[in-house]
Image 1 (cartoon, one colour):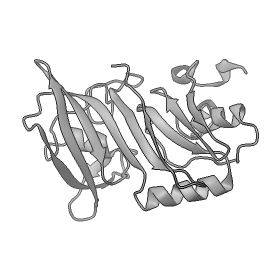
Image 2 (cartoon, rainbow, N blue to C red; image 1 turned 45 degrees about the vertical axis):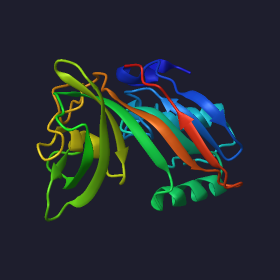
Image 3 (spheres, rainbow, N blue to C red; image 1 turned 90 degrees about the vertical axis):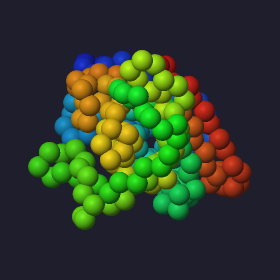
Image 4 (tube, rainbow, N blue to C red; image 1 turned 180 degrees about the horizontal axis):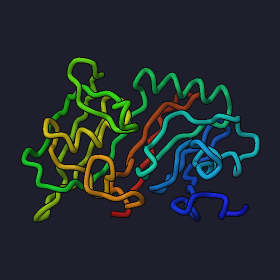
Length: 222
């Protein structure tokens, strides 16, 4: 396949398959790779396209959930319609548990806590999300400080809701941690293409056929 077809930022980025099942696969996504195709021929390299290349019998639209392009880490991708339906229902019913590791610019004072902020899309500055306690929808995140350096904090995030850019906004906003994730080009000081230090580190869900609880772990590179 000609990698020149893909955008420079995604050239050479490939997923790693951690677990393969007839109904689904669990993969590690590198940062700066789309989860699903974007608009235009230069934004077609993505997780679901690569899964379909690796598993030719995969359904046409296998996404169950997404990670932001800049976020790395664990994703589950369906291979069958039955698997996608069962896993999507688990996501809707919040039976899929996830945690993330991040490094933020700044020293977070509290060792742990819960962030509850209502936010919505800013239609004049897509895909940026803005705090709006009137028209926004509530996002809830638990956090724990794992370590601190002189100017940064390493955080474990456990999102209790699944809003777009939830962890990024909860980190950066003054009513949240007030410290943007390192490399975040939307809510922090990062530039387009920078490595954002946010990684989906754990993922657990129930097998869509056997109902057995499955748990996966991925260590960040930072």
